Length: 596
Image (cartoon, rainbow, N blue to C red; front, side, top):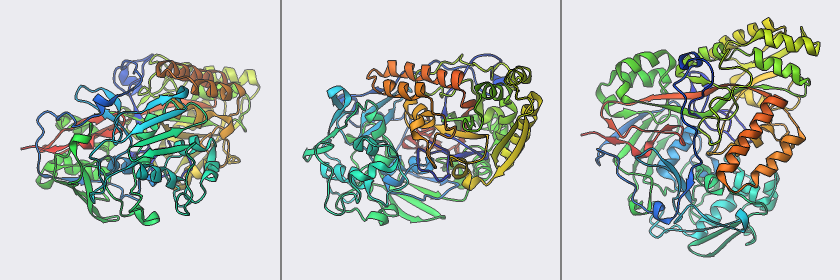
């Protein structure tokens, strides 16, 4: 997923942190002290998130210690919601809201012990695979309803997935549609070009609903990540009877614990309890507060100041998505640490190298050694904004190795110009011109100077090229973009590197607007991606994805790891249930309550 507010055709989601474009992580290790790397001490390697059965998927959710019912929370948000239709949701703030108003077949649950699992949400469990992962069967729970009281049936689930093929659905994830059609890119739409609106339906060989409770997905290839994918906001249920097509994006029917009472785009939104939500059917969510009063246009500095001052309405206020601004971070940690939550986000910042233009791997490796990770991170808040990275895979993902650092980015965070020049001399490319494209934000401008200085010390001739932030990904997304290096912030869509390595480095995905920004097309990478995708054991698959990431980074070097994004959020003193959720890459909004 690319970062927030950038138009795209492939995975996206996140929040802007101190001017950078961001999302997920844990902590990395290897070389240097934590403060030098810009992060905390290394965390233990993560295990794959387990797929839960019926018992773990039954409601109600365990109570948050000390929680009570009642009260209203004020919410300070920077950005208004552009999309409310689940099928159009693929950016961080809308995903956060979705946890409160929409439900899906599965959900990633965080329990009170800090453990994560994929549970059945509308379904009785996380799914029952057969035929080596090609077929998945789901059964709907009893007592699940939309806000108008109508029961949620398999007809609604079928409609939810069939409408994803309609031409007006353009913003959400496309994983499951592509799996259904066994197609890449936008070719999946050919399976059901108009969606269900002209009376056509997906064949039972793809999606079958034999009765009101049963849904069967059938794929041509094993899809062992389906329970993860179904937990995405973009696959939440839509009412077949109340689907208003394009209008649904502004006035959806809620299935979660809250519903929308009012929404003034760009100004405010009010959420109130959804009386048709039954906690006995929900293993993960709560309905503690009476409602949420959300107002928009609060920049990070504004929301941080209000919440830090902790007076008036701000005592019972929070921001779902705004981070503490970098300039206030130290003061917040000094004066209000007990009202904060912190964590890593799924995004990993990496310097992409255009392999069409920088063809010699020795030159690409010289760039990797020379890149100044710590000076690049400094304008984005230093340790408060991220932790320096040794590899391309987030520490939030299973398989990550905390001591992995092939280019010495942790040992020498300022870069290694001597090693870089040595490689350039061997390649006969000292003085080589590099066109470095970057966003025109204040932070990127400062960072670009540090990057240019470090690369020039190594023997490159760097030409900086400033690009508009709003169209940055559009411009670097052109195959013939004319740039040699540029930073791309990419985050996983679920807890697997299968949503990192293939979209970024599969040569069969090279196209304008695609996410293979380096244009790398290596037969070894392509074939190994197909092999790892077929591995059913999540633990083994995680290890193999990381091994493939090593080959990508060390042998092909189409990108350079820079840092893992971090985030700190603050709440008023009257807000309880403050928990950072790694899967949400945010404060867990489903656990919040108003203190007595």
